[in-house]
Length: 235
Image (cartoon, rainbow, N blue to C red; front, side, top):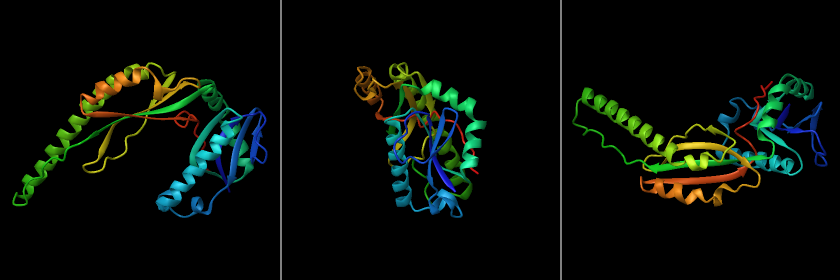
C-alpha cells in the first residue's frame, strides 16, 4: 500500500524520490505507515503520532516544492499500488491541470479572525427540566446569531487583504474551547510568491479595525496550496 502525498509537474525530481509518472505528472509517495492501515484509520490514532506524521507530510511536500510545482494531497491518501496511482493520475488529469493553472507561481496564506466568547450563564439547578431545555435552546440561538453577525463583520474587515488574493477558499471552523479563543473566520488565500502577507501595508489597518471589536487577526504561511488541490480517491 502507498501513502501518496503530492502531485507534481514533471521536471527534475529530487534524488531518491519515490513516484509514478503519467505524461507530465508525477505522484510522489512513500510506503503507507501501519497506522494508516489500522482499523479506524486516522481517527483512532494517538494525537502525538498524528502531529509527528503531519509534520513529516509537510516536510516532504516542502522538499518537493523546492524544485517542482506541487499540489499537496490530503494527508492519509492511501492507494493500493502504483497501478492505482497511475490510474488516478489518468482519470483526474483534467482537474489536476486546472489546479496547476490556478496555483502556478502562487502560494497559500492562512487568515483567521478569532475572539473570546464569554460564557452564557446556565439556569440554576432548581429550574425545571422544561425551563432548563428552553434556556439551552435560547442560549444556542443567541450564540449562533452573535457568531453569524461577528463572522460577517470579520469578513468585511479583512476585505483589503482578501482583495490581494488571486483565489480564496473559506475553511471549516474548528470548535472553540470553553472560555478560549473561538475562530470566527478562516480563509485560505492564494498570493504571488513574491508577496508577503504578514508584512503587507493593509495588515495593520485590518488588525486595528478588528481590535476595536474585540477580535484578533492571525496570519499564517506561506504554504504550498493545501486548500487548492484535486481529490484523489483512496483505494
